[in-house]
Image (cartoon, rainbow, N blue to C red; front, side, top):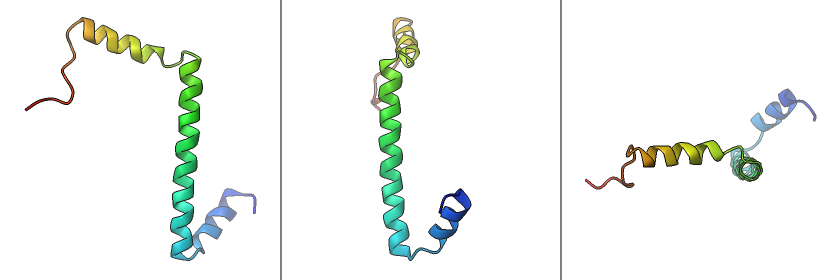
Length: 70
């Protein structure tokens, strides 16, 4: 089983319990991969622009306390 089409077909044939186990595993793997990429991007300085934008907004008074108090 090596193509996406074959994998999709196999997933469609799974019993519901196995489908949900696979879905949970997939979500965990996706989250782990995302976290790893965020760490790599942060270390490389690729997210510095976010901090710069936030600091500029704070300096210019465009921010509000969070959570917003009603």
